[in-house]
Each structure stands twice: as structure tokens, then as C-alpha cells.
Length: 371
Length: 98
Image 1 (cartoon, rainbow over the protein chains, first blue to last red):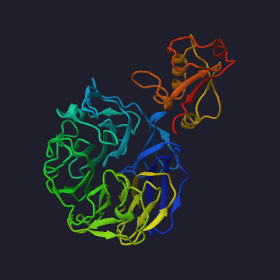
Image 2 (cartoon, rainbow over the protein chains, first blue to last red; image 1 turned 120 degrees about the horizontal axis):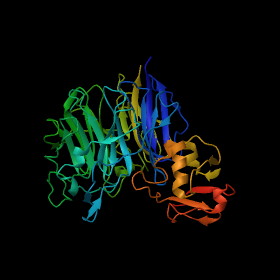
Image 3 (tube, rainbow over the protein chains, first blue to last red; image 1 turned 45 degrees about the horizontal axis):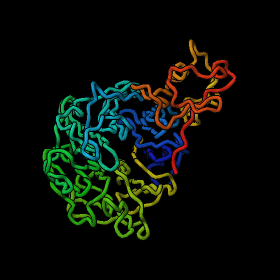
Image 4 (cartoon, helix red, strand yellow; image 1 turned 180 degrees about the horizontal axis):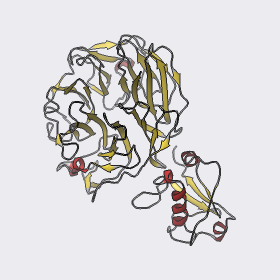
């Protein structure tokens, strides 16, 4: 019988949540890396028991942890994230040049084909790759070396490379997203990169339709349709039908088009999920009602999913990495909140139940569907 | 032997209980002690000082013999009591927050 393993990163450690395929009873692990921020954990699609975790602290910096037994035991990997060459500068909040400084890893993306290979998206915005299971890391410097790199500026959360999507149909193509530079795509395995932001509009920028500078919060792809991307931007939900070459807005009937996560149903490429947040200055759900919005039409037409979610006095946020889906039938959907709740739905969002209510603030959720 | 006290999070990371005792070759300095610790416990590399610059991380402090030695030069000799193992060299996570 299938089983589900949720990998939950929080402000104060990581948790592994497991259930059988019914998804009714969950076992919650004790915290791994207790007291440390865990921005992200993810398992290898090739070997699901190979897990990678980004553990960091303002005191002791970055640690990468690796597990070969599904998170039962962990061993530290390498943490020497050295920028290639002379790092140079990007722009600081005040528009002055500021040296590139490695701060932490926001996102880990294991290879689709090689269990020893994993990518790391870092702050300050940069992309690293390990070919030896996380022991050593080399920068894919073509991204940061893009001619626009010296003009990138941080968003409020720092200048983070927070999303990495590997194209399952083309091993040389990948997408990344940076706050606040935007989406970039490589078609040559990371050697060179092109901005993919045509159609985005950000009214806070001097040039609202500039090629780079957009605060993209998350992008998502369905693995069977890699030419279609969805985006939750600082404001606006967007879609691209040409692998990022152009974008159009699909916010439609949402009560707010500000938010962080966006995700795609495991079996229905036109079914997508977002969690509207009131505004960029009020990071909580509109009207104090925690609602996931689902579109079955790839955007524009949205329905509120509220069954089992708090519909009054709820002022949590759902961060960009904190939503995931499993690949069972029906599709399971999961998200974590800054209030420490992890909610799950075993029926594609129709009904929700809290899996656990009182974790530290949730930074990320990943779902593994195990045989 | 040199005695070193590490903060709880770094002891956990290095799978250690209690104080570390080390043999350190040559002059006993911050640098030589940290070099010896990192050689024995590679997972601690980068957690106390920067990989590239070798500068102390901002919220890591060094104490010995009741004194804050954090801002001493890394190649300055440490107190004799540390060098003979009478007193530990303490790596401390700074109290920060509010």
C-alpha cells in the first residue's frame, strides 16, 4: 500500500510526517536539527530515501544535512558555498552597490535522474550544484554572471533564489526564480540564462515592465506539461504557455492576488492552487478567513476551498515553499502556516484537516508518495 | 591537552557530549585551536568562522579565563592557563534576541 511522507521545514527544526495511503492517521517525528531554521527539505525522485535538508542559523551559518534512510538518520554534508571568481556587487536596498554575500540555502532540488546530484538555490541569489550527494558544491556562475546581475536588488525577505524547477522533458532546461529579479531559464544545463519575465507588470518599479526586477514569489509546473508555468507574483497570479517566454495574468476572481505559494494538481495540469493574502503590508488572509483557492481552468475562474479551514480570526501566512501535493488518487494537497499548523486534504482540496497544529512557524512542505 | 567548550548546537552537530580535548601543535592561538577542531570535526567548518575570510562569525564569541577574547587577533597567543589545559577555551553563541 502506498504511503505519504511530508517533509516540513520550520523556524526551529524539521519534522517528518508519515501516513499510509488513506491519509487519515499521521505520525509526527520529533524535531530534527532542533533550534535551527530549516528552510527546505526534499527527497530524490530517483531514490526517495535520499533526503537533503538546508539547516541554518544566524549564529552558526549554513549546514546541509543528508539522509539515506528517509530521515531516520542524518549526516552533515558540505557547507562551503563559495561564489565563483571575483563575486562583484549587486544593488542594495538603497540602490548602492553591495558585495555578493552567501547567507543561506533556500531551496534544494535533487536531480530527476541521478541520486548524487542536487541543486541549491541560495541567498544572495545564486545557484549551486553538488554531484557527490551534497559533500561539495560548485556555483553555476552563469546565472549570477548574467549582464543584469549587478542590478539585481533584494526583496523584503532578502535576495533569494527560492525556486528551482527541472524540466522532465529536457535535462538541459531548468527554471529558477529570484526575489526580486524574476524568472530565468537555461537551455544548456546552467551555462547561460535568459530572463523570462515578459508580460509581468510591477507598478512599484520605475519601469513596471522591465526585463528584470520583478518580485516573483513562486513558480510551478506540471511534470507532464513542462511548457506551461504558473506564477504567484508579489501581486498577480500569472501563467505562461510558452515555457516562460511570455506571461498573462490569470488572477481573475481571486479576493486578493497577493500571496506566496502556487501549486499544480498531480493529475490535472489545469487545476492549480493559491492562498490569497490580504496585501504586501498585511501578511494574513483577507477577512481572517483561511481559504485555499482552486482553479480547474488554469486560472481566472477560482473557487474558495474552506471546508475544515478556520473561517474567522485567522491571521497566519502561508509561505512560498509551504504547499505540496502527493500523487495518489485522489490527489492530496498540503500546506503549512506561520502559526505552525500543517493542513492536509485527501480529496484535492474539497475537505481539509489539520495534521498537526502546533509546530514552529512552517517554512516549507514537501510531499513524497512512497510505494 | 587543550580543552575546548562548544555551544550545545555545535556539540549536537558534531555528535559530541561535553568538553573536547585536543592536542594542538605549535603556539596555542585561536587559529591553531580552531584548525585542530575543524580537522577532527569537519562538519564544524564554516560554523564558527567564515570559510573564505576565516573571520569569526558575528554571533560567535571566544572566552577564556573570564575574559572576552573575541576581538583578539587570531594568531595572538592565548593565556597560559589555556595552553596547559588548566582552563578551557570557550566558543559561545552570543546572546542575541529580545
